[in-house]
Image (cartoon, rainbow, N blue to C red):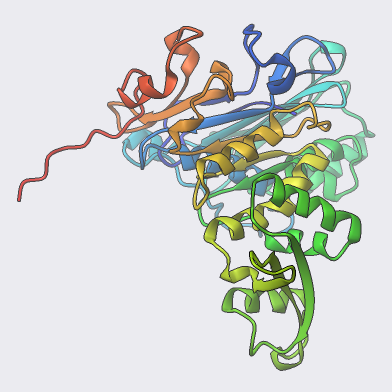
Length: 424
């Protein structure tokens, strides 16, 4: 599970900003909204929400986490020597433009806490280290740091880092200046680091602006009898007026909606478009005055229903795998009750794999003590330096019975837009 994520000098973020999923001592919703770690020394939150005005930097916090995930996944395989990394520092201050961006993730996996840190500029990785805490005791496995005066990296391997000296030398020498050692060593069959690599790449699911949950996951579940029932229960629990969903195979694209045509090529790669067999989703409704049913193409349903279907596969997959899911603007095209429903799926003891949900939203109806604990509510706003500042509701010590939605809309916690007067 994710414990905390920190970022420095990335896009609108200048100084170090940290989002923590460590639960406070508050006992509210402790059984549903929090979970004890295997180490038993703390409880973690199953979800968190982030509020703030437009352009405050909420999305950049998610982009930063996705940047770290992509660096781990791709730096050793998709990046060539001399190729610039897609990193943008804080550009509104001269000093920041010349400094590296920093990313640090802390998580627990199989009872062991890990801290992994990367600092990088567009030209190179400037620092990288990994610390593990088996039985709560720190073990620094490896560290590298670029020394400009020597134009070279200094390396250090701890006594608990496995591998013979010759193996370590191969992993070290194979790590390019713009690639991560973690990624390179795993590509060269380092098994000790594989679980850390896999957690970052596969257990962090980040939906940044412009990226949606892939509807193919939902389509694939409809193809399987047992999974189809789960998708239907997911939809019907949200009070969607659909009696059943049918996945129908059709040939050609002439009658397929444009959005579905894009999916057709993914389902049938390599085939000419006119010969492809595509999967079409039909939503069946009972007639109000007769006992029979009528089918509508899913893409004739409301935007909210389509959105919920897109969510179904990814949402259930995240819950099944115990992933940490980050979603930008969760409430887009959804009724507030549907958004609440999606959050409640994570804030539940039925969330047996302890999946986590972190999302940004403008839906203030979620500022409800019956849904969220105070430590699950976060804000982002710009400071005087026009840089993003991330902070928790706990900084305001709200009363347990405080009307959080009213307080936020009145500006008690900041992170609201300041609307000026427009002169005609």
